[in-house]
Amino acid sequence: MESKLVQGQQIPEYLPLPSLECIEVPKIFDWVLKVTQIVDESTVDPALCLPLPSSFRIEVRVIDVDCFEKPGSTRENVVVTVGTTPVTLQRVVMKKVGTYEVTIIDTSVIPNVVHCRYTKNFVRFEKVLLCAPPGTVIDCHIVTDATRIEVLDIVDNTFVNVDIVICQSIQVKANVKLMVEAELCQPRAEIPIPENPCVVTFPPQCPDIFPGAPYPFP
Image: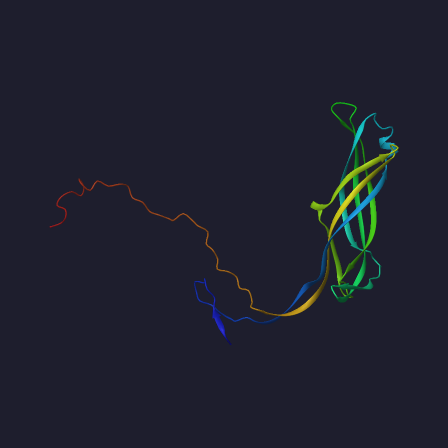
């Protein structure tokens, strides 16, 4: 069997050259970034918020969002043309659930104070074309830095309409077995911790007077 010298070792060590190895890894069949816009309406909490102040502003923030393939849904085959080539993809039903918070600020007083605060849940479904054959799973996560929410308007001081923009990273995955050329990993050489050397020192001497002449010895 062929072998090679592993460099950087204090004592030379010989290992086999790369060989064919069978490994199991997650393969990505498809990957898209999808932006979804949701207009949602929440009812102002009457117990907490009514009556409203004479002047106010509304602030909103997303508390959490999650996305996943709708449980129990069926992936339908759809033939599309990419360039001039017909390709069979799957229509996947995605479900999004989330919660946002509405805060009404009383601006009729200085400093402004929080008049009331409540939360609202939302659920939305959408269909996405993906390469998602049987045996694959959908891995969806929210890109939080690109997800935002803003107030559109308040209707009759009763309904708060918000616009939610959600960025999703959707991947289609399945574990596959691959034959690859590889070699086994080896631990690196240990790097010693730098330490102060142990040094013995002597007091300074007076050679001019001791041991004195004759020096050098005759």
